Length: 226
Image (cartoon, rainbow, N blue to C red; front, side, top):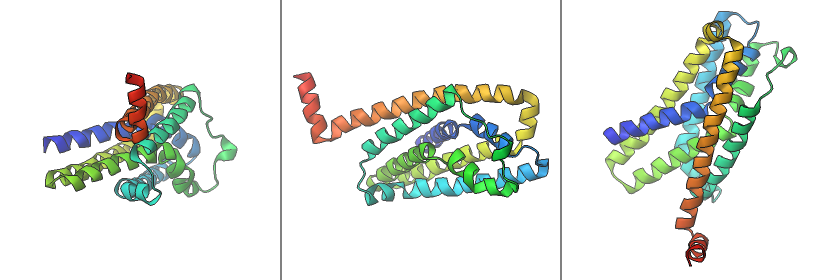
């Protein structure tokens, strides 16, 4: 039970930062500028539902996705880490904010694209969710009932992170009044630095696991230690 709760909490923290909440908040404020408060809250709720659906499919079908395309988990982890590193660099160094001409006439048009996908659930966010779900499912299939319990609790952590992001968007106007757009942009850049560290960790973990588990990796290790 304790291990399942720790796993859920770890997923919550990790995924909340992977969502780049302050970047998403900044984009949400820019894309919904001029809309009424009730309309903005409605969009926040609906885009949260979109994120939950996309994330649920990624978490539960991640293992099947890797097997379908014959992808190795550690190789996919390295690729996801590189993708996340690129996104984090763009986030830390600056990202263009939508202008008035980028906003649609009907605010409902931004709910799925671009706000739900790819601003919230982009490739750099979906890939780690696939990895977390695939790892937890593999462990559950090889273990017992408690491992299945941990697998389900891991999804609870994802739901918590998504709801926390949706709450930020729901109270976007209040946060803008309290902090201002400039401070939100600064928070967004700081979160980019955190994502860089997470990306580097993913790449390193995938690389060393690949060396441990593959025949080619074993030969490289033998050559390095000879």
